[in-house]
Image 1 (cartoon, rainbow, N blue to C red):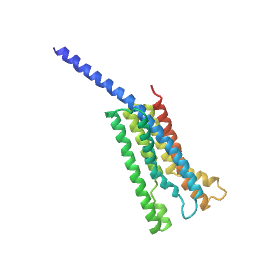
Image 2 (cartoon, rainbow, N blue to C red):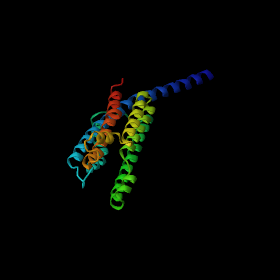
Image 3 (spheres, one colour):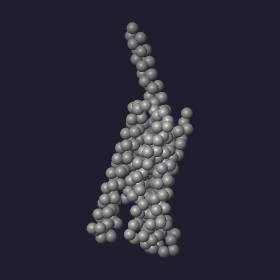
Image 4 (cartoon, rainbow, N blue to C red):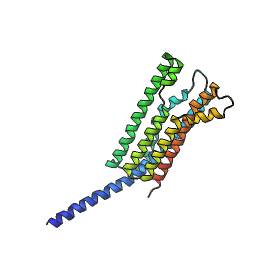
Length: 232
């Protein structure tokens, strides 16, 4: 009788383990589709914003194109909704719920941080001297890519995908270092014949973050998403 109970318990544990593994595989494909769509949308938005900032660059409306980032979550949601309507999607499971909560938490933090930075930048530019404004402005891009890298890494842990963990760490920390230390702007100014020309500096400040986001979306979102989609 005792042996029967032990075998039943072992069998139950085995069934639960198998179900979790199957759920993880199914969620991996759905997550891959989400990452792929998010990567494509983000890359396209980065290109559009860079073009707008380049066309409209002047002392009055520098960087106005960055306001379009607020529309990106809505665009991604609309594409995902359309995809889910056309394809049978995985029922909600523990693994899927953990992944969804990870990315919803990331979205709320990023949107909140972006809005705070936007409001502070608007107020500080009008009440502070230029030196104080430059010293106190909130840098948005480095923090966002770092948070996104963390979300990708956590997703990799949930799905037990080691390569996805590595992608998240490399993309997040790499883009954070590049953007935080202003490496792109430094290179542009060093290559410029007139390093202190305000127009060139403004162009670097408004367009290079788009390049950082584009590279991150390619390395951290689209490529991992494509690999997850193609997993058997």
